[in-house]
Image 1 (cartoon, helix red, strand yellow):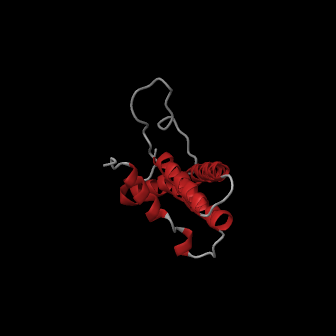
Image 2 (cartoon, helix red, strand yellow):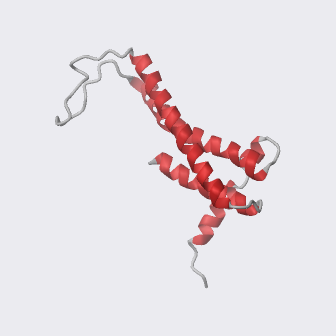
Image 3 (spheres, one colour):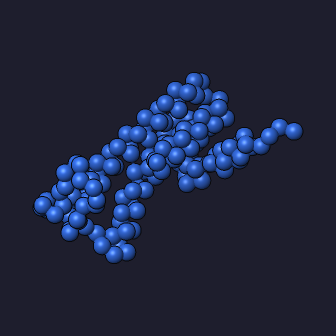
Length: 141
């Protein structure tokens, strides 16, 4: 769900940047940005699964596995415990969508706005995007 919200915001950002840069066919760039976001997110989810299985040691036992119809949670004996485990889980949950947004920002910078590479230019236009979203909720007077 976090990834979906970030993807919607990223393609809105690309659409507004493409219109501002007067790029021909901005919807094509929106589609490319959505595709880049999905590919990066899918690759990093697979990498996360690989990393987690490597950390856990892929020790599959009867305590871990459950059948599809059983109710309740798995008994994860080799899982992450404590504050470090929670932080690692949060990191692995948020890393793929944030990396997708970063990849969309690079595509936007190099192919749409064609500006020089800097942190300021990489995330420029986000404030304007949020202000235009806020303006869209105001009723006309």
